[in-house]
Image 1 (spheres, rainbow, N blue to C red):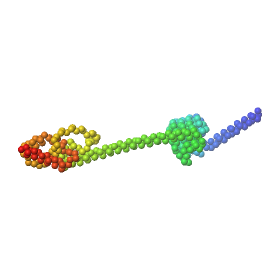
Image 2 (cartoon, rainbow, N blue to C red; image 1 turned 45 degrees about the vertical axis):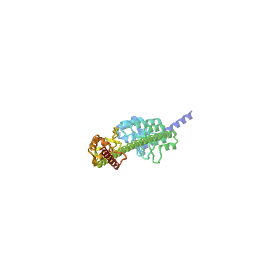
Image 3 (cartoon, one colour; image 1 turned 180 degrees about the horizontal axis):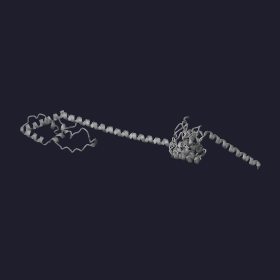
Image 4 (cartoon, helix red, strand yellow; image 1 turned 90 degrees about the vertical axis):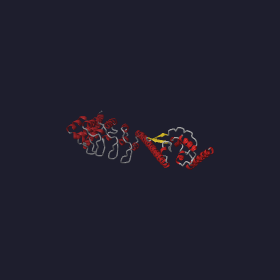
Length: 347
C-alpha cells in the first residue's frame, strides 16, 4: 500500500510539475492580464482587466502577435468572445501580425464542439469566411487541413470561397486529400459541382438573353430597311408619274403590296372590281393626241362615248400589263381609223 501511495504521489507531483512548466511557458509569451484571461477563459478576470484599461483588449502577444480575440477563439471561449466583440467593440476580423483572424483560429480539433460554436458566432457577427492570411490560407483551408467537417459545412453554407489558392498553389480540397479527410473531400466536391452548375445556368441564361436581343435588333433593322425601301419605291413611282404627266394617280396605283402607316406594316386594302368597258386602253393617250378630222356625226358619237368615262374610270385603264406605249398608240390609231372608215361607209 505504501508503494502504491508513493507511486500515486509521484505521478501527482509529475503532473503538477508539467502544469507549472506549461504555465511558465505561457507567461513568457503572454505578459498581459487581459491576454491571460482571454486565453484561460476567465470571464470575471477579463472584465476586471478591461474595466481598468479598455485598450488592453487590443494588446498582442510577443511571439505571434495574437490579440485577446485570437486567444479566446483559439481556446474556444465563447463568453470571452462575446465580451470582446459586443462590449469592447473589438473588430471581428482583427488581424494578427501574420494575418491570422479569429475565424481561422476558432477552427481546431482540440475542442470541436466549442470550436463550432465560436465559429458560428463569429460568422453571425459578420466575420469574412473567405479572407486569407498573408500566406493565402483561408478558413476553408484550415477546416480542410484539420478535418473539421462541421466547421467546413458551416463555412460553405455561409458562402465561403472554395477555389482560392494559397501561397503553395494548393486548394482546400488538396489539403483534404493530403491529410486523408474523405468527408471533407466529398463536401468540397459536392459544393464545387453546385458552383459549376450555377455558372453553367448563368451563362446559358445570359446567352439566351443576348440571342433574344440580337434577334430583336435584326427585326428592327429589317423593318427599317423595308420601310426605307418602300419610301424609295414610292418616291421613284411619284417621279415616274410626274415624268409621264400622271402625278394625280398615286392613290389608285402603287408599285408595292404593303403600305407603311405610322411606322407599322398594314395589308393592302382590297380593290373593288373594275367595270367592264370596251377595249379602248389608251384614253389618256387619245385625249392628249391629235384627233383626225371626222364627220360631224362621228364627232358627236365620239364625244358622247368619251363623256361616259369620268376621270377616275379613265385612270383605271392606264396601267396595262405587258403592253408597251407603242402598241397602245398603234391600237388607238387603228381604232380611230376603223371608226372613221365605218362612218364613211355609213354615210
